[in-house]
Image 1 (tube, rainbow, N blue to C red):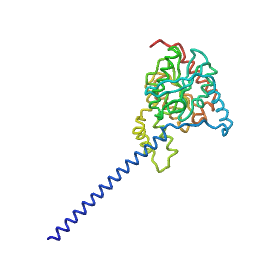
Image 2 (cartoon, rainbow, N blue to C red):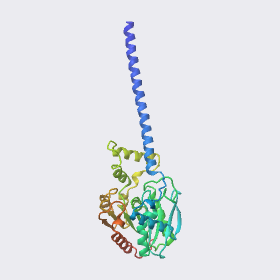
Image 3 (cartoon, helix red, strand yellow):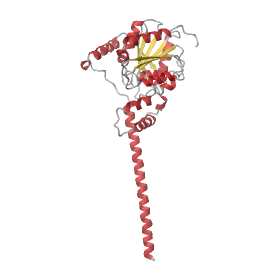
Image 4 (cartoon, helix red, strand yellow):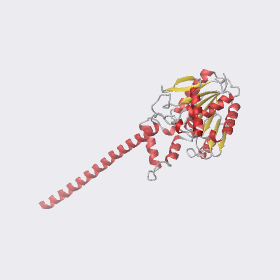
Length: 335
C-alpha cells in the first residue's frame, strides 16, 4: 500500500516538474522573442530614420555626366542667396536658401530626396527658375544638412514642415505671390502629403518628380530587392512599423500621399519615368487616379528613378513652365 502511494506521489512530482519545465521554456522563449523584436525593430529604425550625414559625391570619382551635375550643384551653393531659418511645429529649426530673380515672381519651394542634398537635387529647378525668372527656395528637410533634428520621420512630421515653409513664404512675400511646392522622390511624396493639411491659398500647385504612393509601400517595394529570400517581406514591415512606433514615437501609416491627394483641391503635376525601379510607374498612375483636384501626368520614357530631367530636359522644363504659368494667375483675396 505504501509503495503504491509512493509511486503515485513520484508520478505527480514528475508531472509537476515537467509542467514547470514547459512553463520555464515558454517564459524563456517569450523573453527571447521580446528581445529579438525589440532589438530588431530598434536596429531597423536606426538604419532608416536616424540622422546620418551624407557626404557630397566626390568629383574625383565622378563620370563626365556626374561631374557636370555636381559642378552645377557647387555653383548653386556658392551663389548669392539668403539663408532662411524657420521653426517647425515641434520646435525643430529648419533651414533653407532663397534665390531671388524677380520680386513678386512665382516662388518654388523645393524639397530634396531621402539622404540627399537640396543643392544636388535642386539643380534642375534652379536652372529652370533662372531661365523663367522665378524665385526658388531650396529647403533642407529635418535631420538633413543644415536643418536640425536627429530623426527623419519619413513624411509623418515632414508634411507639416512643408506647411510651415508655405506659411512662412505666404507671410513673408505676401498673399499675392504664387507659391509652388516641388520635390523629388521622398521630397515629392512629402509635398503631396501636405496637400490636405490646410496650405495657404497662395499655394497654387504641387510638382511631383518621381514621388511614391506611401512610405510603407515604398519600403515594402524596395526591401524585396534587398532582403534574402528566406526573410519574409511582411516580417521586415513589422519591424519597421514597430520600430517607428516604439523608438520613433510616430505612426508611419500616416505618411500616405495617395490619401492626401484624394482630399486636396490643389493642382498637381506628376512627372515620372517609365523605367523607375524604386517607385514604379504604377505608383504615378495610382497617385493620378487618387487625386481629387486638377491633375496632369507627364511620363518620361526610358527614365529610371530621379533622372527625369537628365533623360528629357526639354520636355521636363516645358511641362513645369507651362504648369507654373497656367496656375500663377491673379490670386483671389480669400484670407
